[in-house]
Each structure stands twice: as structure tokens, then as C-alpha cells.
Length: 126
Image (cartoon, rainbow, N blue to C red; front, side):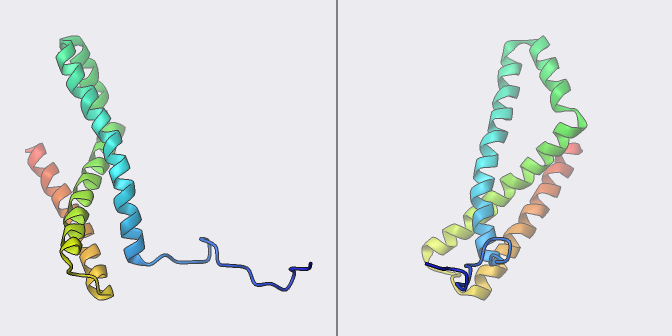
């Protein structure tokens, strides 16, 4: 059996996922990333409970620039998951399924997550 003339099915390298699919995948990935961030939060709380030396070590680790950047990104992931979760709740009620509204609500979720992240960090730094 020769299969030389058969067309190949599209692969992810040539297929562009729709925006709504990307936001759905991002929502799932953000849930996983939140679990990792929660472990860092648990480390910080356990270090605080373990005594001043453990807390000082944890504070020096968590206040380093690379970790601060990761915490900033984690904050964005937290707010993205929150905003997109609200979007999913609206869908559960039965609204916003048409393509234009679904795309617009995804854009709003990303924009709101960015705004909430900046607001949270500005408040935390004051």
C-alpha cells in the first residue's frame, strides 16, 4: 500500500488556534501555575512560624529580583485566572457564547488582569 499521495493533516506548527481556545488553554495553565505559587506562599508562612532565622532566610530569598519578577508574574496569573473564571461563570449562566462576545470578553479578562496586577503592586509598594 502506497501512501505517498495522501494529504497530511495539519499539525500545530501550521494551524493557528482561535483566540478563545488560547484563553481556555491559558486558564487551565494558570490554574497549575497558581498551585506552584501557593507552595511558595506556604514556604513563606512556614518560615515565619519556624522562627526569626528561618523567616530572615525566606525573606532574603523572596526579596531577590528574580523571585520578585516571578511573584509579579504569579500575581498576573492569579488575576487572569480570577477574571477568566468570572467569564466562565457568565458562560455557565448562558451568556456570551457568540464568537464576537467571547473574543471581546477574553480581551477584557486579559486587560483587567493586567490592570489589577498593576494596581495591586502599586498599593503594595506604597
